[in-house]
Length: 317
Image (tube, rainbow, N blue to C red):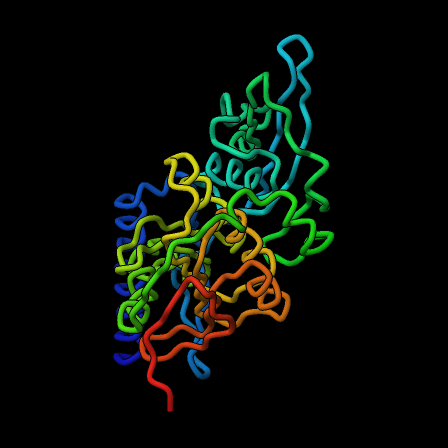
């Protein structure tokens, strides 16, 4: 009986400590924006179960509405519904419009805001982007079905040729970059340190924009890897950083076709993924002269394509 009481006391104090940690974490990181959520779970070790609180990543739909046209003939169009982690929604929407070729510059945007709806719960799940009256969006150039999910994929993209027609920077003159392996090996850990939501949930994607000397310039998180990248590119676009041809993009997971497409749209020269690239991602990297790295760890990396503008110091066996 004493042993049972002792175990129960340990569980009580552990759960209480965990709850206090979660509350402090959410307060410290200003997580009222519900990017994470506390739930009760039953954790089983071997045959023993314990009820305790846990933190999970929030996933909710975001509707992106676009208003455009002359002042007296404004058109409102539903562009996309994407599943995302709430937060940085404006950057996500603007980055999405740019990487799809619908807008060509941050200067095309007149205003961006969340729409208030009749449903209180959903009030942050619709965002409207207003374009300037003299700009005509390139809606026909983006040949895809605008319903996307957090799992990523080709999403109806017509072909590699379709991307060429809307990319502003992919074939611009790229500067020469010299990268050291030592610097590359440090980037995943630096990105992980910046992942506040991942530290709490263990279930969220991230991407980071690094300088050639290893400085983390921007980072964003989301349950959808393509959403995280749209947030990053939207932030870079608003900060007038494009083209990103002097930077390295680090992806916390695998490198998909869509992520390389978005990198090409913003002029990125180097993409390094913690996981594996897909076959189509490799083809696209070759097509756009992007250095593509995979399985980047603290002491190893695979080079799937080597751009003629990027050199990485290696020792040939």
